[in-house]
Image (cartoon, rainbow, N blue to C red; front, side):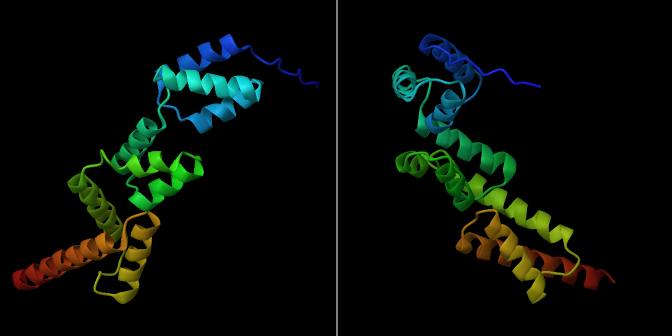
Length: 173
């Protein structure tokens, strides 16, 4: 079966498509440049269109980075390091990556990290007083992108909670 080659689209067609895309969800300029390439738009037209979309404020890499960071913290339970790496992998400008965490509430961020650690601890059989278990929890939280100091505080808090619960159960018996 022979595949038909796609005809390149015009600048105006690409602008209409990009506008529809940007109206549905936040887009970043590197992702749009890739899309324009697949649409067959010339490099010059693609750059001109990105400039036009930025001028119209349909595309804003900083706004995209902030929305991405908020969603990844709130819904995926990611930490700062993992989010920054994901944004850098998308080839966003460094300024946009640095501004990504401006809208992330510190209390909410710590609450998400606590939720992630507690979920991991619940899934494990051994108590956090065990060195191996504690190391697994540390590695897991670090792989989610949370900072070492935050992970240390949270693991200590959860371990203390576990010790209190064990003590309370021992007293009840």
